[in-house]
Length: 67
View (cartoon, rainbow, N blue to C red):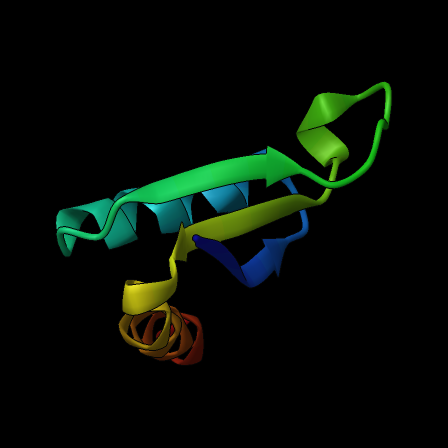
């Protein structure tokens, strides 16, 4: 089962976080939240498997806090 661990404010940030999680061997899916015509400005859910959710959330939290 997939679990949302973060909602990114746009596609660029979602892709950046996806790459970072993938580099940590976590499989990630991205899913747009809204039907905004400009997809680059749409909110994007970052999903991981439920079994990896805690680890992925910790990785993202550390990444965000470093920024």
